[in-house]
Length: 159
Length: 75
Image (tube, rainbow over all chains, first blue to last red; front, side):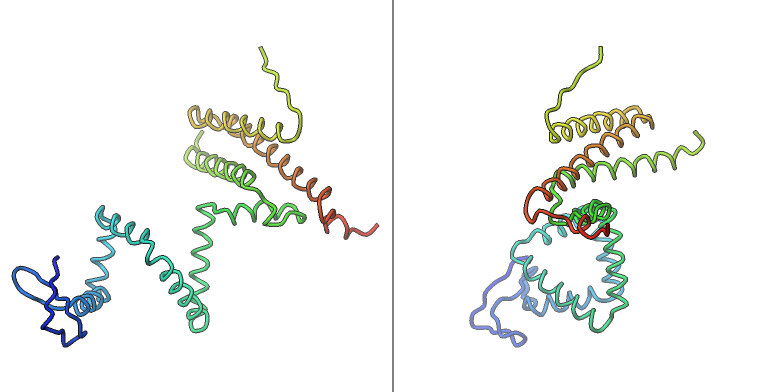
């Protein structure tokens, strides 16, 4: 939606000059609008809408665009670290559950660190830094194949 | 007629067994034959063992020149 600059009119809310212009009327400043939207998203209706919106095609594109935005990646990483340490101090149970869910996700995805753990646990002489990318790829192929064999066996139990 | 494959060193063995594993894996995707799948797993296992052995050999012959696991055993 377009915005206009009204230099002789200063917003009493934020002291800025940018207003939100919609349908021939000047509505409100951006900051007030974003605050209202944030408050609505925190309500029950807002949460249900957002969860269903993110499942649509437009919502997925929107999320992808936001995640790939380079200007906010560093900021989001810093906020995530602060949240982690805040949860560690105030709510260790929540953090423990989050770590468990994250570990299960990385095992499903077969990340590099999980594969390195599988390789290094058999031999005490090999450390995580010694493992090369070729070896990781080989092991990943093997693990994926064993999972497929197990799934195939589950689906065809009568054979 | 059987195909003969010549290998010079461990790297060749790793590459050959990995390729064998990949072809057998692709065959399993199409035929869904479990025997083929297990043979593919064996091929991958051989390649992985070769790569691990190469790693340990490099550690033994390189620097620092020893692995703690072998040093700590009592005679």
